[in-house]
Image (tube, rainbow, N blue to C red):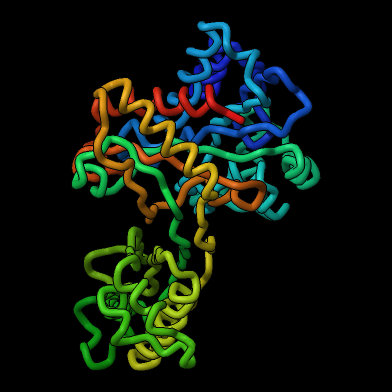
Length: 403
């Protein structure tokens, strides 16, 4: 709520009309010279993960508002050729409720009404949490948050790269050509809880040992997919080659019950995050991984449940928007550094972004900003002041040349 109040103040200072919707998204809009034209949406998310840095998501919001404010100060805001709406999305990461894109998903209309019934670890439901913060939402009002695709021209997002490519090539900005698809699984392994000192090793049904073996198999599968895949013969050479360069898999959370040092666990739960540019390849990995997990459970006489918590297909960015963003980036760097000999790089995104959700509504484009060491989702996350400046100038150039 503090962030919402602060962002609204920034937006109003930039000459925007503001409001907050029932999912906690902050909107700031200017109609420009033609209020009936299709609107450009621009923004990012205001949340991040636990123990993170300050640039993930926030940089895109600050860049957008700063560019709009520059136009406002220079008397150019009302001359925009189409409406521009800056949106600070409320929840992209899905940390608390294990459901990504709550903010942008509501705008895109891809959230089912049952989303409001999802609970956090303390059994607090999304709808109750929102109501406590003066956002009384129902299934009906959630569906009404969806924008009319006919009213939207496109969506642009500035975001830190969260990877090392731009730093490696020595460029502060890069244009995103596509975003990897991603799947999140929750795996629950149940065995026989017992005393750590009295149950012989040969008689144990230990879910922790089973989970450990499954996690090692996951790592091996994702490092060497060509040695595992058996998707009914449908995995082509190009798919396997794509996976070899883009597939990443992570177990980021694991919990046990009853979680005591002298007790063989009765249950182990862990999460799996799988990402790849090739959607068919990602599905093949999930198919094979699931088969391997069940085989290990059968071998160890424990039970397994695999739940799909999130699925998002890969997104290809719009070529025209990408071209305009590349020109804007070039213009910004030329202002800062003079003549630029090298071409603004293009790259794929392994991280998910609000642009994935908004792609269900309209065409999307993304601009990446270099971050030190490629580090993100960490207190060590850092962007140089000059690179923040470049991002702001590029956003400004994009808006000034908006068709």
